[in-house]
Image (cartoon, rainbow, N blue to C red; front, top):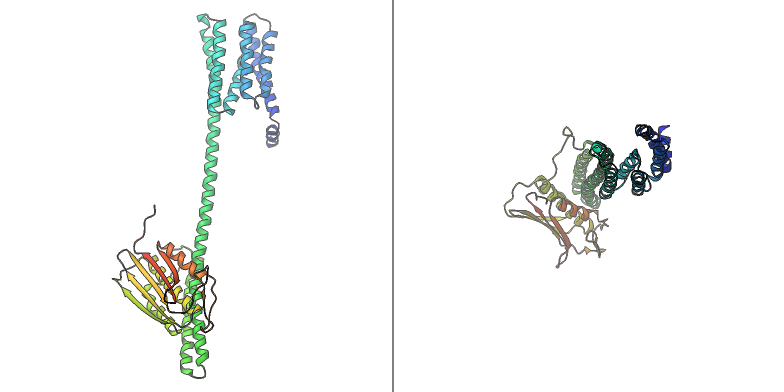
Length: 405
């Protein structure tokens, strides 16, 4: 019920103004009548003057400054023109209060200074006797109290509005940050799944082709290829289980963790490619040192994806992996001597001639993932065809965490 009344009053503000005007008259009428009896004046004059002062309050919410001017003018006329000592400034006080609440601080300060000054000046001119000093001070105190109350209400509303805006802004910021983190986590898991599945499935496909080719001519070697398929499949399941575990357990410290792959596993990685028919050589320069975990895994994944792309899109060619350890960064270069080159407009797909074995078609996610991994580790990655043929991927990863800002 109260909510309905409030909504109706907000929809028709003139009803509120009318209620304020009537309430002002009813509250101030006893004071005006008592003042008339005290000065032995007719009661009709103070009530009429009070009614005239309350009439402008009907437009209080729409024209607060004009209403203050109108009520002040009526009071001054009562004091100066009609020489009525019992003129009540109650309507002017209400108008000053409302004007202070609904207008800006500068406008409210100017209008109330003019209104209070004019009323006090008219009162002093009409009753300059020192005995009436308390009456003048009471007038100043009453109007000042109305102004101070309005100023307090306006400040409180501004404070609440500011707090609400800050809360809404903080909520939007939290939502945006949550969406950003979800997106980053989704991309990270997608990179892990792509690297694990693309690498192992490429090897399984290559080893299955070897087994199929040798099944009749050389069953012993075909059997060895099948064993490598089994081992590769088991490794793929293990890495896939570890990656899915990240989704299931999140950052739970009690969750089972498996060691993340790093350059310590590089020999095994290159061995798996060699078994698939890719001739890979490794060259290390500089003094190897313990790498940060992020850099270690990023370097491993970049090499893994680069060789996977070579085996998938070019076939059983030769490739070379170079690791150059510096004091501040690790440089990685993966090159192959395949005949392919990146297609126009994309460095993630490689054209393969018809003579290549098991040519593949890429989606570009592998190259995108390598770039994202390098950026996440604070490094850079470039890829492109070699002048002498083949393809080259070069990455530089910092050995120390770079400070942001």
